[in-house]
Each structure stands twice: as structure tokens, then as C-alpha cells.
Length: 190
Image (cartoon, rainbow, N blue to C red; front, side, top):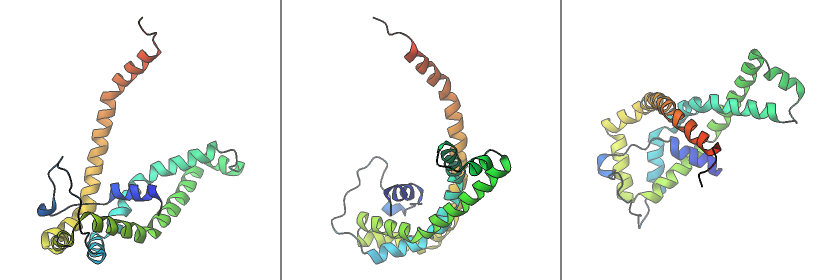
């Protein structure tokens, strides 16, 4: 699996932990002398139902991916003129975007087993077998099962809140960015 997909997956996978397995913010994470078993780690990842979490997240980033691919095709001299013409209309862009989304989605879903395997390996390396068993016990408890069930909805709500806050932060920062960039163009004082 490519490194960008692994990094993207690490950012997107939910990692709720039982209170006993949580580390205080800013506290160093001790390395595990004896890694846990891959079977227990795989059981945790299976409980997490990666597809339920990853599908909505990939759908959220899909418009940006589609836009980037379409813009790259328009800028690439090797793109056939009929395709560039199609991208020049709203209907054509929508049609091309649908194809891109379908193919990206299919390609991502084909890699879910690889993503799950990579996630299980990371869990195995980070946690001892007793810790893995405690995490698995939590996920199989009523509270853990409810958390896993709610995870996609939580991520969607938190993602929307993040977009709103990000937009507000961007609007607040933009005048300062403009002022600082304008100052770069001014001659420096001697």
C-alpha cells in the first residue's frame, strides 16, 4: 500500500479508546516492549468496520479530488481536446466528475483490506496483548458497540463543525495574511 494512502488512513480511522487505554494529552506514549498479537489487533479492526467509517470520509473529500483531477486534465497538454471541451461545460464536468468519483470510490474500497491490515499492524505494534484485549473488550461491550455504531455520524457532525470553524478562522486570518503579504512587497527599512 502506498505511503500517502497509509497516512490518509491514519488520519481518517476512528481511534476511540476505552478510558483505561487513553493517554493524557501531551503525555509521552511509552513504547511497548512486547507487541500484541496480530489476531487480537485484527479482531479490533474488524469490530471497527472500516468501510462504515471510510466510505463517508472519502465521500467528503471526493469533491476536492474530482476538482483536482479535472483541473489537472485541463492543464495537461496530453488531455485530448474532446475531453477538454467536455470539461468546459457544466453538464460535461458533472459527467466526468461522476466517472472520477465512481472509479476513485471503487479503487478505495478495493484497498479496504489493505487499510485494515495496516491498521491492525499499527495496533499490534503500539499495544501489548493485555491492552489489545482490553480495547477489544471495550468494543464488544454495549458502550463500545454503541460508540462504533455512532462513529460515522459523529465524524460527519464533527467534520461539518470543523468546516464551519475553519471557514470562520480563514475569514478572520485573511486580512492579516493580506497585510503581511503586502508588507513583503514593501521595501525593507535600512
